Image (cartoon, rainbow, N blue to C red; front, side):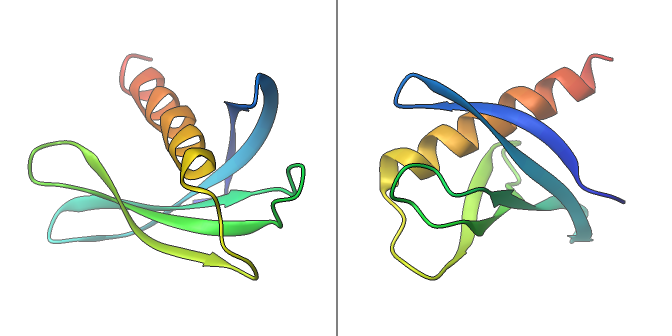
Length: 89
């Protein structure tokens, strides 16, 4: 599946990240979220996994520098909204 863009908000500014669906593990969905350079944060990737409870958990963070927790939270929130919208379309 090709990457699909989704919006997220960080520090009251709108940005765009990309979600790529990866092969599922044990029937649960997995995605790689690629985020751009944002302020002093260098671009990187976050791997998210669907849990048995139907929630999403960050599995792995790939980047050249540490990524602030609040930034990861905002990217993940944007992704969850994107996934929820996909489900209802």
